[in-house]
Image (cartoon, rainbow, N blue to C red):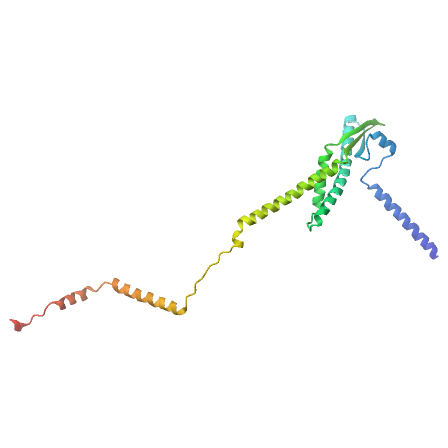
Length: 237
């Protein structure tokens, strides 16, 4: 009984793995072609990335079908180019990680997308044909151009970071000089005795000035003038 359960378990596991493999093959980004198809593509697999696409001719005509086939081929080829550029950029940024500088995954994807978008503009049509009511087209890109374009975007991105850092250093160096040479204010302490003497002198000076500035009473002035006149006695006559 136990052996039967083991056999059933192993069989189920094998079937599950086979199903996962089939699912993985279904979602594989890079299409697979037979050798006969590749011969008809007129491409060099060792030196080129390529994609073939087809579109059924409908009432819109063969020209529209050919346009649709080319659009699909561009999408497929751009995806391959994006994956290649991402791998190259990851190898480049590994040199940066050793210097404790972290670059986000989103940045790498953006640069790879930028590189693939520019490369796809240079894609060439290696072959196109009509068969069984369908329009077929094959597009290709030189593989060697992918690392070159990825390197170009990598250098430009790093140079922009270096330029930003240089501007920050210059700004701090030129505008924040007072931080390195702070102004020292010297405060002279005055003793309590000196403060008392200064206050006494000031009060005395104020009193003297006040006495000089106060006007005398007119009555007092007249009385004093009268007192200054000589007294007259009757005996003198």
